[in-house]
Structure formats: structure tokens, C-alpha cells
Image 1 (cartoon, one colour):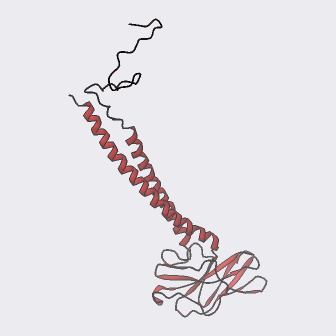
Image 2: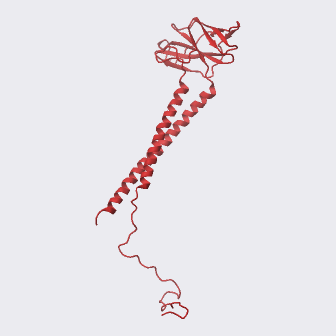
Length: 244
């Protein structure tokens, strides 16, 4: 029965409950449960993310390897031990040769000897500096320090940087190599390697290694987690779709 103002009067007071207090919550209907989530969107996205991260790991590993090989490759020796692509001129020690050089450029001199002529930790050295006769008649000694001291091995030969110099003028230089303590030795003239780019390449390689490790770990975690999640969701979907 309604009051004159359209408000239904409260029922009789319930013992133990203050007047006007809300009643107990309605009990859930029997047999009703929260529906199980069976969507595969989440697992698929996580799995795809894992695959993408692993592909990124492969790309990063390749770039890191290329950077490292470029940093340590001197180009003094080819794979068969002959003069490599960076060699501008080569001469037996002792012996002479000629080379075209550019004014102001820095060049390095390398001594190449048979690998068997040295001990395991020995490095080829020259007792005297290689001399270069400039077009003007000036004699230049290759007795400076190279930007990067390098040692490389290929085809049964070992090459080591033994000096460096700056060309005072452009033109054809006559190179005179002194005798070496090892038979069949020869010297090679190459462009000098600047230290800053070499250092940057080495640090780029180090950072690349950490990037590869991070991407690989994240990719494997996402891939494994996505597959496990996918399997669990697929089982839940089959359970929901199963006839009762």
C-alpha cells in the first residue's frame, strides 16, 4: 500500500537491525558462475611479440658480428697470405718499391713474416725504420706510432704494424725497407687506422652483445609464455564448447 506521497512505507522493523538500515545482500542464484575467458587474442599477441623479438635478435647479432669483423680486420693480408685490399705497396725486406701518397694523410707500415718463424707470443719487429723518399727529395722515416697497433694472421703469414708516418706532399714516394731478422719477410704500406673510429666500433660491438642478450632473453620469455598461455586458453575454449 502506497502513502499519499507515492512512497511505499517500510515494513515492520526487524529485530537486531536498526530502523532504516539496508537489508542483507541478495544471495547469488544457484548454478551461475563467472564465464571463463577463452579469447586467444592475448596469447597470440604475446607469441607474435616473442617471434618479432627473436628476429630482432638475429638482426642485431648479424650487425654486431659485422661491426666486430670490420673493427678487427686490418686488410693487410688476404686469406692466402698475399697482400690484402688495404695494401698500397709491398716490398721485400730488404728491398724497395714505389707508392703514390697524398699530402697530409697518415699511413702505417706493417712487417709480414712466415707464421712459423715466430714463437706463439712473438710479434714481428724491425730494428730500423722504413724510409720513404718524397718527390721533393725529403726523406721521411716511418718511425711514428700507428693509430691502432695491430697484428693479423692469414695463409700461414703474420703481419704486425711497426711504424707510421704522415706524407708531407702528394706524389710518388720510393720506399726502402731495411733487412728483417726473419727470412722471406716483406713490408706493406697501408692507410693508418684512426683510433677514435676503432674505439667506437669496439664499444658498439660490446653494446651490441648486450642488446643481443637482452632481446634474446625477452624474445624467448615472450615466446614460451605466449605458447603456454595459448595452450591454456585453447583448453578452456574446448571445455566451454564441450557438450554438457
